[in-house]
Length: 115
Length: 114
Image (cartoon, rainbow over all chains, first blue to last red; front, side, top):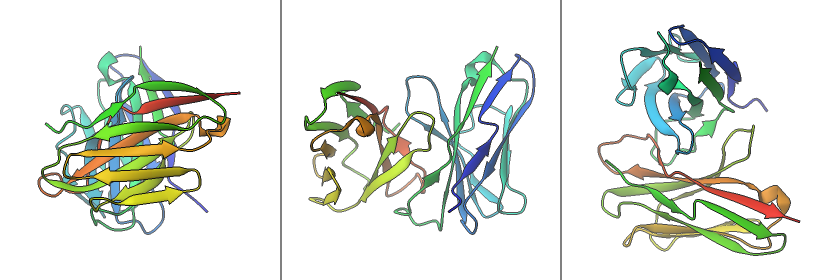
């Protein structure tokens, strides 16, 4: 069955470039999360959507980071004017509902390298 | 700031060895603990969601226990196989203040050698 997919899998950007990372959640999943995993760290929460509503963006590290999910399915994480510290693996996860014990299904991640 | 800690950071074992890792988390405000297995170049895969103190869950050769009063969970792998090589992550969900976002530990990287 189709799981969560992310594209691209790998992205190399020059410092100052804008990038857009895409997440296709499991069809029908209400909740969608973005996490950032820096080298040697565990994934850290960036933002959360319930359908098309962005209910929590407390983890976005700066105003260069922007996420959207306009139709409540596909989501895009955009990073403007990329910096070297943005280099990380960006993980997307979806869950069927919004219960605290709902399993979050993860995509394979996008590895972003900023030169 | 929530502190979710995992130990050891990495582990090398021989095929057939049994092993265990620890995840410690804040005992106050506990709601749930998730365990994930993350193989290189693949998606993190959910192993367990644990909520009750004293809970013990099992999936094949992998099992986990939970102590919410003292704030720790153990993950056990019996008879490790090379395919168990992966990073094992635990993630905490608090009862209040965090919604359903996961707060992860830094993971335990397991390498099983022939």
